[in-house]
Image 1 (spheres, rainbow, N blue to C red):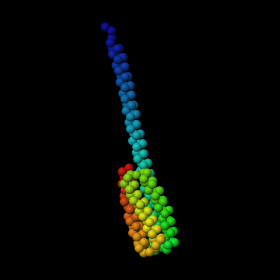
Image 2 (tube, rainbow, N blue to C red; image 1 turned 90 degrees about the horizontal axis):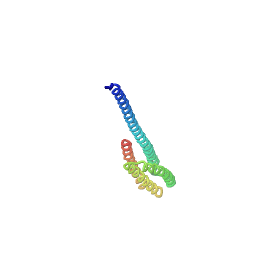
Image 3 (tube, helix red, strand yellow; image 1 turned 120 degrees about the horizontal axis):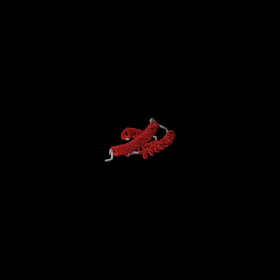
Image 4 (cartoon, rainbow, N blue to C red; image 1 turned 30 degrees about the horizontal axis):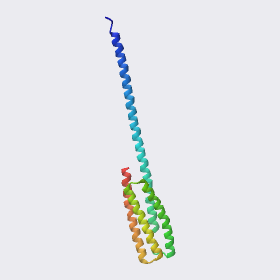
Length: 171
């Protein structure tokens, strides 16, 4: 009877090499999958942070423009017709900058922020109407209406800020 120990040793060696190779292949495949998952997670985190930063910049720009509109109209009651015309032209420029900022918000979203931004733009348009009425007829009643409209506009800034903060927290 031939010695089977050599055959057993060869089979054991081949089995060990095959098992080692299989384990190595499975391990490298698992490592590759883990690496792909990590890359996907990192990419998603970077994408979300980029969205957050873009939105933050757009929201800050709108807040700044909204404040500029409000500041530009403080104390305009009691102006002469000529001064009112100049104030109306200056407000038109500020309103256009606000409109551009709202357009950017429309692109960035989300809908709650879009609505709050649109409300500011509508109120700014109402301010234009009230200011034009004051420019045409600088009476006390028009001045009072302008100031009430301005206060209503200023009250709309806070809901926008709250909606923007919530949107940034959710991003």
